[in-house]
Structure formats: C-alpha cells, structure tokens
Amino acid sequence: MVETKTSKVPAGAVELYNIFIHGGMNRRDFLDGLKKFAVAGMTVPSLVEALMPNYAAAQQVAPTDARIKAEYLTVPSPQGNGSIKGLFVRPASATATTRLPGILVIHENRGLNPHIEDVARRFALANFMAFAPDALTSVGGYPGDEARAGQLFGTVDRAKMTEDFVAAAMWLKNRPDSTGRIGATGFCFGGGIANTLAVRLGADIAAVAPYYGAAPAAADVPKIKAAVLVHHGETDTRLVMAWPAYEAALKAGGVTYEGHIYPGAAHGFNNDATPERYNKAAADAAWASTIAWFNKYVRG
Image 1: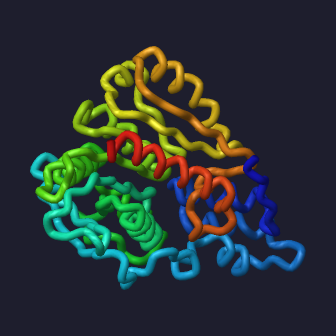
Image 2: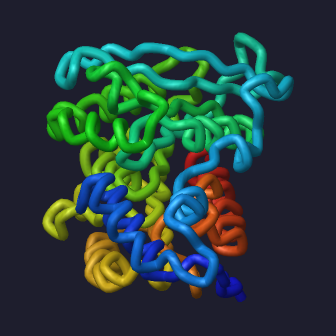
C-alpha cells in the first residue's frame, strides 16, 4: 500500500503552486495568493521556499558520478526548430562497441532542469542509455530560473516543439551504439509528449511510461504499437477522471498497457525537487515498475 503523505503546507497553497507552474497565473499573483495561507508560523517566503524546487537537495546521481558518462549533444531537427540540445548519458561500464536500449526522458513545462537531468542519469545506472532533450533550445535553453523558464516555454511553437522530440527519439533509436529499441518517459507536459510519441512513432518505439500526462485523442490510440505504462496520483483528479476513457481506448485498440493510480499522491508526485508534491512511496513504486516495464519491453 502506498502511504498518504502529510505536510505542514496547506493543500490550497500546493494547488496554487500547481496553477502557477502550469501557466494559470503569473508570479506576482502566485505570491499574492499565498498570503492567505501565511498562518501558523508560515510566512510567504517560507511557503515559497517549501514549494519551489530544491534541485541540490534532491539530486540522486551527481553529474560527476564515476558510474556514468554524460555529455551535452545537439540533434538536428529540420521539421522542428532546427535542432534540439540535450543531456546524453550512458553507463561508464559500456564500451564504445556496447549497444544499449535507449530511453528518451521528457521534462515538465520548464525545460531541461537539473531534476530531469538527474532522472536521465538514474536511467544510466539502470543500464540504459538516456537522452533528455531541452525543448527550450531554440530560445536559449533552460535559463536556471523556473519563472523565466515558464515564460520561455510559452513562446516556443508547440507543433515545432513536438517535431523536436520526434527528431530526438529517432536520433536515439538510430545511434550506432543503440540496439534500435527505445522507450520514452515524461512528466506532466512530458507525460503527454510520451503519449504523443507512442502515436507518432508506431512500431519505432517499444514502450512509453507517461507520468501524469495528457492522453492522446481516442481516435489516435489504435496507432500505438508501444507498451504503455501510465502513472497518476490519486488527488490529481482531472487526469484520474480522464484515465478510464484512455484505458478503454487502449483496450479497444489491443494495446499492451498497465495503469497505476497511487493513493494519496498528487500531481508531480515523482519530483523529489519539490518536496510538497513529492510522495516517496508513490515515486519509488512508479520508478520500480517503470524500470521493470522498460526492461521487459525495451531491453527485450
């Protein structure tokens, strides 16, 4: 049983943060909205500190970890924004001739931040090669500031952004050190892109594991040939309510799938850089099932 998380931060403040990070309000309105939750010793600055990401504290695999080899590479994207840059990671134990299955790691709507880079490094420790592309490449890349990242994200053409991810996936698949089998995972916006890639790439992608991502249109689901593993948090009601329709479409389309709804977990439960959304029990369970899924369907 996945345990329910308790917190000193009011649930309303967490929901306000979710609205803010999804573009539903600007930073000034977010800070103003927090004032009504500044009670019982919690000031607005302390609420902001509790809600905003702490990447250093959450890091699990350091960039200098001797068990991995990591580098930034740029992938051509002629149908998208011209190119897309990202972090490419392999296990240090892999030689130049070692062929590995690949996992595309797709960020939330803030670009390639340190948390997503850390997730990519975790896949390398699970003996995959991973590529985490940055959809903000065409506007200078992830700027290091979450509010600014959100603003930049809204300026990138969404159709071209999708093509950038398609190009990144096919580049990963066709690398000479790839087995030719790839999967994709993503979080929030990235979860929706993982579902989109399952539709777009058909048999070219073996499996996807979207975390709290938007489902594709029901009419597109029969195009999916990948094995689909869906993760949602119980209190993420909008997406939880949408899951039965997606499940019905997957079942009708004969798609191999599993879906998990984690008790007590919120939207963003996997992001350990945002402690007020993070649910360790749910995140650990989802990660274990994701690795098992990719080992079964991508490593093959």
